[in-house]
Image 1: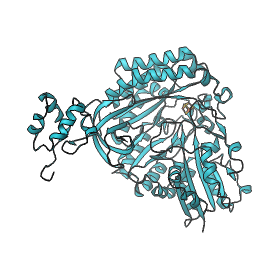
Image 2 (image 1 turned 60 degrees about the vertical axis):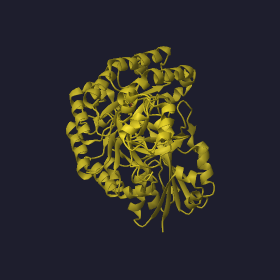
Image 3 (image 1 turned 180 degrees about the vertical axis):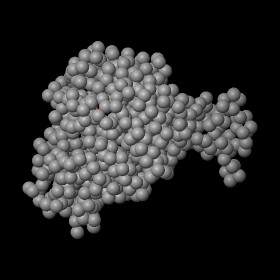
Image 4 (image 1 turned 90 degrees about the horizontal axis):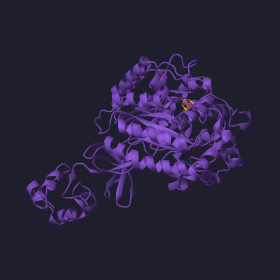
Length: 578
Ligand code: SF4
């Protein structure tokens, strides 16, 4: 029997995320190719974090005829629930698997480099792993794997550069491979499936942005709406309830009619309506439906169509959604020298449009759909002035009262094949100090105020999933695109969904307490974080418990007004058995 192991070392690319709680299309499509070839094949899917936590799993990998590793980070992010594999780890994990054929898929193989963190030089994959892998997949993982299986695992006969003939070609693998999700450790409650609608960028006809690898995929090749729906239907049938339509350069440009000849094609509102409505029909009880990237140049040029699309998304999605706008820089010199997609004015109008349509608060406590901004530092033409202009731009957004869900400041990873690869990380190194002080300034002077607007004190955030502890604080997030980090003072059971009420703000996270809070049972750490209470009053509350009624509780306060205010956060459990 054909036995295949898929080791998911996670991917993070401009148009695809596969770090938990996300699962990217890579392992799903590859599993589909294997089952399409042999429906009885045994597939063992495992994540790098599972292997880190259980060394015996490395041995299980070795029991397979074929080990497929998926890895590669080209836009590193901040991760809470998993961390991408490092070259050193891979060597260690695979050192005792001599009997199995091993292939590497994902951006690490396709771009020939292993990026670890922003600003660092990419490390050449073939040099790193020359003796470890039998094949480096430079084409499409599922297509090459299928070819390899047809060739009876003969790598000599297999072309590692094979790509799918068109976007529809992956359909024969997409639905059938969906059942592999059940092996993911986050399945079913906390797993988000990243959904691909197309690859390639309309701006490839003008060379694309200097740092981006997407233009190497050519002009957009859209997956038919029926194909995307069919895949989501299969995932839904297999138990998935969280989806992000995140794998494409710009969701507003999906199915745009002139995408093969216009760098900013006119959006196709009917197609977006058909897609999002269709998803709701086939997955009626889904719990998360979010989007990701949007091109601000498209939003600025077609405000009417994009306003309509934003409304369509809001009609069918779940709140707390983010349209991540690739700004990179608002310095006109940097924009020009790097062939970026939008000027400062265009980005501003896109932010305004999204705020007008999406700033209303949804049922889970967060605004429906907000813009997020992505900046890249280390680009050609960057000077001290660039940092000043970017800061002024953010300040203007803040002062205008507009909302930004997220400001992502990252340093360039020079990807082979892009224009920036020749320049490398020279500019990153030169401007390193300026970057770090800019970052600090944005955190302190922009982001915290923004966060206070997005999730003000007293707002209830629904269904926060508790993920990890740091000291006596539990950290959790709602499920979705760019979820807000929530610190919950106290130690609460992990992997539970709880409602919380916001009490305070950090630079990039909020402090919140479970809502409503059982004051007769809550810990000191939690009670002292109720606004107006603090350590002294919290201690008095604890020694005066149990309270039989509200008056009892208020009487325990030195200040009645604070006692009454506390009632907004708490309830009194029955004290009969306490
Ligand atoms: S618009 Fe620029 S950054 Fe976005 S996918 Fe195209 S080339 Fe890449």
